[in-house]
Length: 216
Image 1 (cartoon, rainbow, N blue to C red):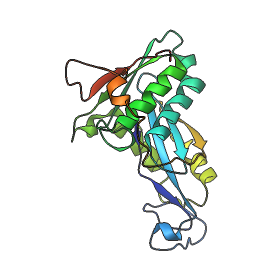
Image 2 (image 1 turned 45 degrees about the vertical axis):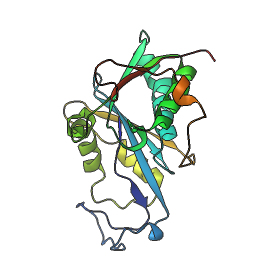
Image 3 (image 1 turned 180 degrees about the vertical axis):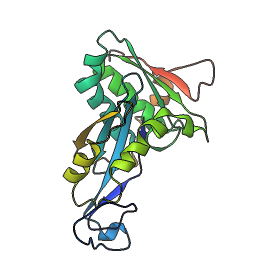
């Protein structure tokens, strides 16, 4: 999983070319002060089924948002595609909303597995190696191509464009909108670091660990 480049909504210039029947006039700068809002595209790529799942947020790219995207994927799709699964493996970068150094992500992850009642194993890519994440070259480039040159006037338009993403090798994309506002600067509960149930691997524990459901 990973979060794609954030986009602004409004009559703002976007790079790329497209065929139109009339001239399209836009503002030449994409300052946030000129925008009507923004979109935070969080992506999950199912390697086995060659399918992308995009969650469009309207707020901040936080650990809570990332966990909500995982929850949405599992409840609506994953649990039906993999009914015998007892663990989920997620490969992701070491920064952003799923930062390997931030305990708030681990805290939100623990809450998530307790709610879903399934183990989630996290494997962070080491610094400067995120280009090897399959989502970076099997999903995101095709998503970018599907939206090339189009002016994002509404989140509904973005959703419609992203859902048209496909390739000759069978890639398809599902898109959901999550219109929830997330707080930044959240801190972990007092004592979490000392009592957390996260199980770190013996090999590269900073980047490899498991969140196992617990009864509280």
